[in-house]
Amino acid sequence: MKFQKMFGTMMFLCFAFVIFGVGSGVTKDKNSMLDPMEQLGKELFFDKIADPDSMSCADCHAPNKGWTGPLPGINLHGAVYRGAVPQRFGNRKPPSAAYATLSPIFHYDDVEGLFIGGNFWDGRATGESLGNPAADQALGPFLNPVEMNNASKQAVLEQVAASKYAGLWEVVWGDPISYEPDKIDANYDRIGLAIAAYEGSSEVNQFSSKYDSYLEGKVELTEQEAWGLELFNSEDKGNCAACHPSAGLKALFTDFSFDNLGAPKNPKNPFYNMDEVFLDNGDPINPLGSDWIDPGLGGFLATRPEWADFAGENMGKHKVPTLRNVAKAPENDNNFPKAYLHNGVFKSLKEVVHFYNTRDVEVWPAPEVPENVNTDELGNLGLTDDEEDAIVAFMKTLSDVNVVKK
Image (cartoon, rainbow, N blue to C red):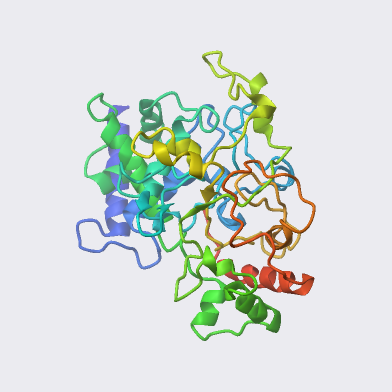
């Protein structure tokens, strides 16, 4: 058995040397978009490394749905995805995994007086540990009991060691995967780095949308889309670019800041019922039940002594997401439902734009966190119904067009 395992690994390594050119100075196969590190990250991203083995990163970050939640029924209701233990739910909808590697390390901008960067909706994946917020973020769900529910870092590494792609680990890192006590932390970090490499690859960050082709002079926007772009950038009307800057080639449509938009609660969020669902130690997942309020950035800052004084003025703020792939849906499915904002309370881009436009002049549910609401850049934009539709039409041009295969 040991000989068979060794022979299999040697054969994989030989195959990898041929395909990936390891040791020859060639980092990519001519038929592949991915180098070995990125390919390892892709294998990890799509592997069901969970307890039980029912959940991968891609189950909440599906490529053909904009690298976010793929299930219509969930998107239409609570928008929060169940974990590997199906009775358990977290508290927020999955953000997009695409373009996440381009977020800067979390920091306070003294000039702007704002916190910038990080990953997760509250910025807590700062990038301080591994040098990239996406790498820090990738390690969180594996050990989260309401997500992938692995018992330990060692348990994660054991599953990778038993995988069909374990030989690729040695190609990338120069030694076999190990979960000896003195190597667990370093090798677990390597998982995050590999996933971030994949998330930073041209397969994930494609810049292949109609808008990108328009900037390259290859296509023209429709009259409605062009009008939407004009409104999107206008300081007098939509003013969307104030937080989602569109200037330049490969614009990311986020300034990586945090905002309280005055969004209401999503009453269907399953997290409100998690006072009746328990972790293995007997604690309820959400002791506050329906009284829970999402603190956003402020909640994270309160856990860090050096930033705790800023917590109050940042309660209710969540990360400004990229608008790339914001309308991404399966091909030819114009009615595919998606969920928007951190809690998925809105179900269409039209609804989001109308909320931004009329929050302060029409009747909407009360904001979940009434403090710190942004009243300077949204709430009474004065857009007509046709202007709202034009902005939506423009945002639909931001969907990448290439198909990602597992």
